[in-house]
Amino acid sequence: MKLTDITEKTSLIKDFGARLAKSTKQKVVATVFNKVKRVAGVSAMPVDFNLENGQVVTAYVRVYANTDIALTKKTKISSIAPLNAQENKSNLKDSKRDFDIYRIDINGKQLPITGDFDNTYKPSFNKSVDEVAAAVSQGQAAFDKKQAAIKVKQVNTTRNASLSIAKKIEVLQTQAVELDQQIVQKEQEKQTLQTQLETLKSQRIA
Image (cartoon, rainbow, N blue to C red; front, top):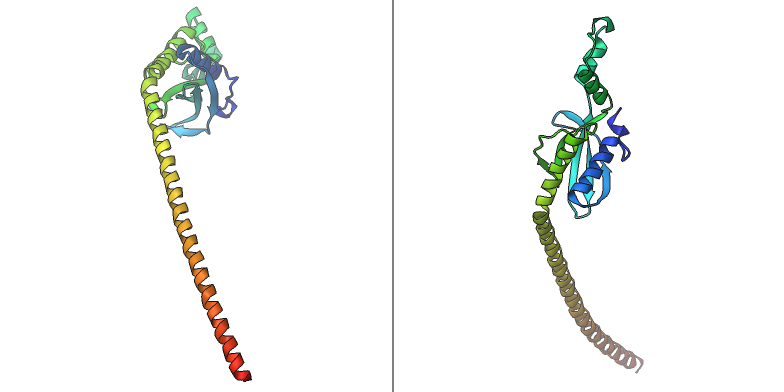
């Protein structure tokens, strides 16, 4: 599997989003699949889970590589000892894993994580996602306060812009009045020149 194969139907993405929504009691209103990039030396796809209250949880997803299975494939079958039931169960579980989450950001800030986001084992997976959800819930009040401050700043900026426009209108209106006065003055000058011209013409004829 490749990172570019990841979609909303990918089991890890679907399970993470569903558990996050359930634990935060918020809907995931949008899931955004960003371009693959190297993060901390690992090729990963940042996937944004946009929650209805505005916060964004970003899961950094990489291709899962099981070194034990990779090693087994390189070993001759005749030299492999029979696996016990637990080893069989472990390899069967791991063989179903295509991707792995190794980093979580909340609103662009990295969240320290210790859990295992292996969705093939739901108890530990759910616990790990619940820890992320708890961080989201704890930070909601601070996030709302920050957003409110941004809105107030936007309103003030708009008001200042309106005042600036009003000032411009005032300046233009003043200039228009001055131009009207100049036009009247020039028309009077024109009339005076025409009178002088007519007088000169009359004197010439006489």
